[in-house]
Length: 627
Image 1 (cartoon, rainbow, N blue to C red):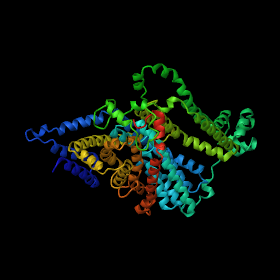
Image 2 (image 1 turned 90 degrees about the horizontal axis):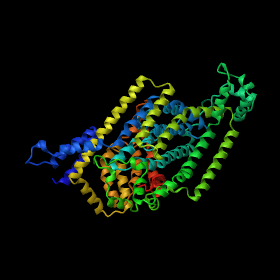
Image 3 (image 1 turned 120 degrees about the vertical axis):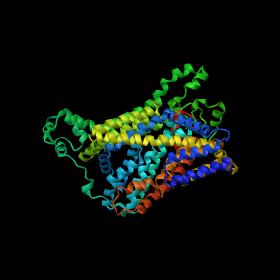
Image 4 (image 1 turned 30 degrees about the horizontal axis):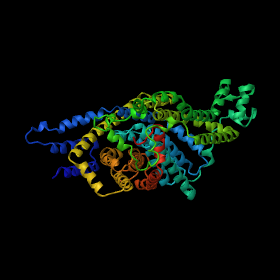
């Protein structure tokens, strides 16, 4: 048997053995060692001198020498601490009350919590199991269709591996030799857009067929208003904002009101006033940060850029943002990304599929050039719209709305602020992905301790599960590095490339073929096997077809959502089945998941037809998104 044929046999065996249930990492290493021994066999040398042992050491060192991979255990620790801290119960309750007038309000609240909890934890199994415990039974008791209830939990739970910070994106970055932060930026909008499509599907189905999601009784949607609030409104005004401002100036009546057995204090009045002003403060801070980053920040760099402009070469090398500082070396190669040749650079700068305009702007990040003229029209339009919404909100701010605001602020805002901080420090180049992961882990500890639900036993569980998951990922990297090296040595990679190029496909046809293969592989395999085994086979072909690896990789991320939703290895279904009532069958859960697979395909089509959704943010922040 020829060496290329051995390579194809090796690829076939890995799929068969994994489907039989053998551990992926050790299967990769075992087949790599076995076929590598055959490839390097030399009868004139002792078997102990076979070069496959040297290859194993080199590939292991190359994989483990990648500093970016340190972020994986830190992000995983962040997720487990948040999950063990039991911070999601109050969040689900408050969001469900906020959307109580929306059709299928329990399902909508479940999807929103799954989205943001998935961002914070990045653990699909933990999110699905947790939401299955918290939301599945309430939806069934409310008369929701089993397909709707199971579908929203299983599909929403998978969003955590798509929306940054995501371990899957870090794994792809290590395999493909791409920048983690650019991939994070590229996955941001598609992740939230896919969640939005899920939301449209849920609300649309509930509107077309109200029987699948009956309206909840008033007793379950009424916001619990403390007794002191009606007394406060009688003393001052039904509008809580007006009443609180008045109470600050004239506190006598307010200080006579009892709150949970004690008198309302002047500091209590101020705390409630600050809680009422929280939406305004959040809007002002958000608008100011946008203005600072887009308008003021580039102006501060005008003088330094002008002084350095005379030194073209140093400026070109110094322009690389924090994204390039986080550029991981290709998995197992042991080669720094800075060692790329000029020929490679010129090839990467060619026009690429899906980037007819976004990638022609050169290496400079557009954010460094200052805002375009139309930015000011959009900015002030958004400011005006935000002001009108806040004006209407405060005009209607009565006791029930005020208490709901306090519930949302105390349950959603801490997690939301932590998530935004973790993402912002990465995307804006303040820290590397590893440093951001450390910030997230520290923040998760603070939130869990503040909630009072985190103890020594839960800490031990979090650390143990983190070590277990990290060890699995590390062995997977080592096995993948060895397997891919032997596969290339046997000529399997060259054989696949020759076959694909002989088909004379257009870039669009190759894009469809590659994504279709990954979609089909998602039925029997998990995302880890697909990324570490099959994605490296496609990566060398991207340059030939002038396909942007950032766009292609983001399409893969969305595509792999289906890997958790497609039987027979639909892990989300099995996670949910483990915590669901006995009368709920796997077939019912599978039926609920199927429409979401079609939504994933629709999202991919829209991403390809509108590549700006994927590439605008990395191109704006870092320049050429494919570089």
